[in-house]
Amino acid sequence: MIWIRLDKVLGTQVSSNNLDVILIGLGMTIGFCIILMHLTGMWPCQLLDASGQILQIDSYGYTDQPINKIIYDMHYWLKDLFQCS
Image 1 (cartoon, rainbow, N blue to C red):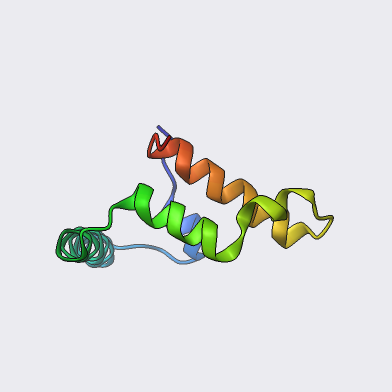
Image 2: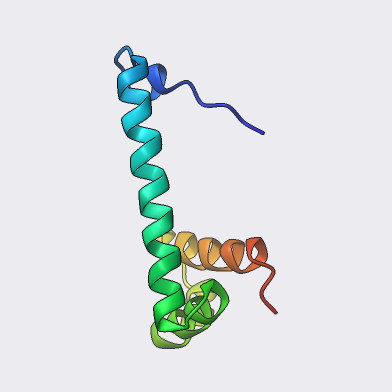
Protein backbone atom coordinates (compact mmCIF):
# COMPACT_ATOMS: atom_id res chain seq x y z
CA MET A 1 0.00 0.00 0.00
CA ILE A 2 1.25 3.45 -0.85
CA TRP A 3 1.23 5.99 1.97
CA ILE A 4 0.85 9.59 0.92
CA ARG A 5 2.23 12.36 3.09
CA LEU A 6 -0.58 14.91 3.21
CA ASP A 7 1.74 17.72 4.27
CA LYS A 8 3.77 17.28 1.07
CA VAL A 9 0.67 17.01 -1.14
CA LEU A 10 -1.08 20.02 0.35
CA GLY A 11 2.10 22.05 0.83
CA THR A 12 1.17 22.83 4.42
CA GLN A 13 1.61 21.23 7.76
CA VAL A 14 -1.33 18.94 8.52
CA SER A 15 -2.39 18.81 12.13
CA SER A 16 -4.37 15.95 13.62
CA ASN A 17 -7.53 18.10 13.62
CA ASN A 18 -7.29 18.60 9.87
CA LEU A 19 -6.57 14.93 9.32
CA ASP A 20 -9.69 14.00 11.29
CA VAL A 21 -11.79 16.32 9.12
CA ILE A 22 -10.33 14.84 5.94
CA LEU A 23 -10.96 11.25 7.05
CA ILE A 24 -14.50 12.02 8.25
CA GLY A 25 -15.30 13.80 4.98
CA LEU A 26 -13.92 10.90 2.95
CA GLY A 27 -15.91 8.38 5.00
CA MET A 28 -19.12 10.38 4.68
CA THR A 29 -18.64 10.71 0.92
CA ILE A 30 -18.12 6.97 0.50
CA GLY A 31 -21.12 6.26 2.74
CA PHE A 32 -23.32 8.65 0.76
CA CYS A 33 -22.29 6.99 -2.51
CA ILE A 34 -23.08 3.53 -1.15
CA ILE A 35 -26.51 4.67 0.10
CA LEU A 36 -27.23 6.31 -3.26
CA MET A 37 -26.17 3.18 -5.15
CA HIS A 38 -28.38 1.05 -2.89
CA LEU A 39 -31.40 3.30 -3.44
CA THR A 40 -30.99 3.47 -7.22
CA GLY A 41 -30.02 -0.18 -7.62
CA MET A 42 -27.08 0.74 -9.85
CA TRP A 43 -23.72 -0.56 -8.70
CA PRO A 44 -20.25 0.37 -10.06
CA CYS A 45 -20.21 -2.20 -12.87
CA GLN A 46 -23.64 -1.13 -14.10
CA LEU A 47 -22.67 2.54 -13.92
CA LEU A 48 -19.47 1.89 -15.86
CA ASP A 49 -21.34 -0.06 -18.53
CA ALA A 50 -24.00 2.64 -18.87
CA SER A 51 -21.48 5.48 -19.03
CA GLY A 52 -19.38 3.54 -21.53
CA GLN A 53 -22.35 3.14 -23.84
CA ILE A 54 -23.47 6.77 -23.52
CA LEU A 55 -19.99 8.24 -24.10
CA GLN A 56 -18.94 5.52 -26.58
CA ILE A 57 -15.72 4.89 -24.66
CA ASP A 58 -14.56 2.17 -27.06
CA SER A 59 -14.03 4.75 -29.80
CA TYR A 60 -11.72 6.76 -27.49
CA GLY A 61 -9.05 4.07 -27.69
CA TYR A 62 -8.38 4.85 -31.35
CA THR A 63 -8.00 8.64 -31.13
CA ASP A 64 -4.75 10.53 -30.81
CA GLN A 65 -6.05 13.11 -28.32
CA PRO A 66 -4.43 12.63 -24.89
CA ILE A 67 -7.56 13.36 -22.84
CA ASN A 68 -9.55 10.71 -24.72
CA LYS A 69 -6.82 8.14 -24.11
CA ILE A 70 -6.81 9.03 -20.39
CA ILE A 71 -10.61 8.61 -20.22
CA TYR A 72 -10.39 5.29 -22.08
CA ASP A 73 -7.62 3.96 -19.81
CA MET A 74 -9.35 5.17 -16.65
CA HIS A 75 -12.65 3.55 -17.68
CA TYR A 76 -11.06 0.15 -18.26
CA TRP A 77 -8.89 0.48 -15.15
CA LEU A 78 -12.06 1.01 -13.07
CA LYS A 79 -13.77 -1.93 -14.76
CA ASP A 80 -10.74 -4.07 -13.93
CA LEU A 81 -10.67 -2.74 -10.35
CA PHE A 82 -14.31 -3.69 -9.74
CA GLN A 83 -13.80 -6.96 -11.66
CA CYS A 84 -16.59 -6.24 -14.13
CA SER A 85 -17.04 -8.65 -16.99
